[in-house]
Image (tube, rainbow, N blue to C red; front, side, top):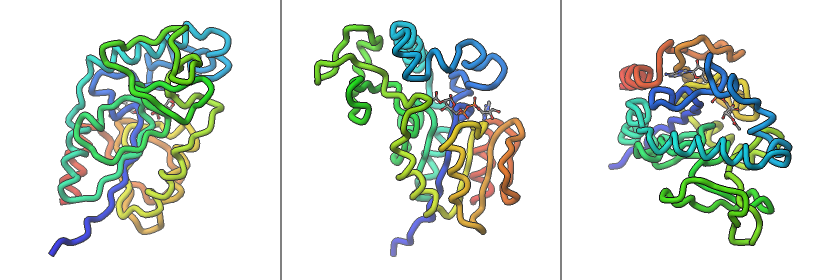
Length: 231
Ligand code: OAD
């Protein structure tokens, strides 16, 4: 007889992909040290200088083409054999999917998709043979294409399904996020009392909950240790 698998919900951030060579945002030499958030990650920045914003995401897309899932991504995909794993990621890369995870919610959009400036909800795949997006590239509705990224000040439509996943979890895991950005950081508040919570990060992360067990290490090592704990 098939037993129901426990639901393991994992919230990931930029640190999840750091060992794949993708820059984080707030670490030293992170992206926000070299770019201003308001220039490249807000609708106002895009209105002021669209070419610069498109170029920023063109660079991120090229960086992603050279990146591979790391042992942490792969370990989370392997956990699907024993757990009903649901990934909620703030990352716009596709490394969870490429590692084999089958349930991934992207809170902040996806680098390999675009949308129209007139409709931020409908996403289209970017052809890997034509990675760069330019002014004048049009969406099917005839309007300018833009990256399918949730910028600061914009709605986060995927937060509702993410909340439902967190409310239903049996085990919650946080990997590689400084928990600085809301509403993603607030997901932790929806974990029911008594459910185990693990946090994997080489630096201490403030959570305002007393029931979080932190594994002070990188994502690959942390997922390896998590598997031992859960075995
Ligand atoms: P941050 O850059 O704020 O935090 C990255 C976290 O990863 C930090 O806590 C690091 O200590 C940790 N870290 C670094 N190396 C690691 C490793 N090898 N293994 C595990 N953890 C590691 O990134 P996020 O919290 O993801 O949004 O940032 C949240 C959002 O802010 C992003 O989605 C992005 C950004 O602005 C948008 O651009 C819309």
